[in-house]
Image (cartoon, rainbow, N blue to C red; front, top):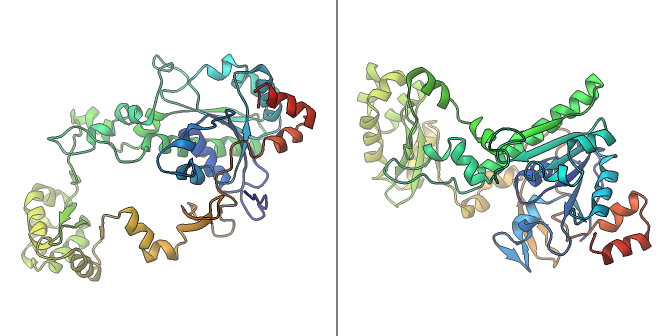
Length: 403
């Protein structure tokens, strides 16, 4: 698979990242940096590589998820349990800006690759450490996955309908949120090194804390009023009207009529001028008291019309609304296409593959996909050669299962 190292015009040109870890939280954080020009060296176990290579839908034995999450990365195979592999990591770490890892706390220390070891070799190093519960505290040694973090962080308790068990969002939010905080932390720490001419530092990201940090007023409401936020299905408690409504064709529409002026436009579009002009409903606190009445009025209107008719009327009235998009809807949507949010690339056998576009969009130095997720060990020889390991030595390391 061809790889282009042309990062001209990309904001992280010259930044070098060493990725240790697997699956989602750590690798997705480095993926975000790779998409904007950072050179990311991904360390994978020899023979099988990152388990993500076998997750979900496979094409010729390789996960389509792998191809998107690992775009722009270089693959180096190392058995980190072997001392010679550990020494190679230490050599590489001396010449990178960021190390990103998501092992259970203590694992890298056991291998001589922890923060104390690597920062002693590279004082300006920034190290992102993502784990289930953080590097300290009574739970730090527990194994942690996104599903558990979403529970502990409070998200699962408020997701779903009140008469049913808690549900997941459908994607690994805990991992993704932790990745975002990890990438932000890395950039903050790197900026500090550059601007304040200081040494590097490590960023401690716990999956459950990344989830908890997004939970809005969950704790202030409990602390002040003893209020425990519960599952409310598709409604938005305390903000009215905002819900998901069924249409005549069995499709669903989300309508957010909770702004004061928007509410009036919504009611007028529904032919409910009586509600639009009701002074008791002019502000959100008044509408909340009559939320069931408003939901009923909206539901009665949508159930008599197709989804497209509902959208047409409400968009004309300038009321925020939208269909619930499936993958098929996204792939066929003209706005996604106009914003270049669906990109076409090629798999190793030449078959086209569509990948998500790069977010966020920078006006002058946008990120881009240089190549899709690499073959296992595709860059091993290149990387080892760059740190002074010759061809014969590489051959020996490979024969001994080190690489």
